[in-house]
Length: 99
Image (cartoon, rainbow, N blue to C red):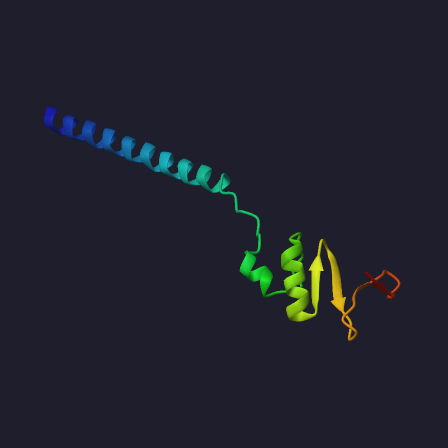
């Protein structure tokens, strides 16, 4: 009779420990998901070099893209090179503003 009670006691302890382990792992998995922060997207220099539509603050890169593509975005404003090799941008009204 005592051996049956001892086995029952071990089974109960085993299931309690298994139950606690399950909830501990589940809680840690949930807390890890909450703290995951995705980094903001910043284009690499090579990607900026080959895409004149990505805005840049780098003046040298801006000049390189103007020479290569005849247009480039610098600080949010798109600059173009005319057929006379003059640099301009379009105003809000659509007028060409030469630099």
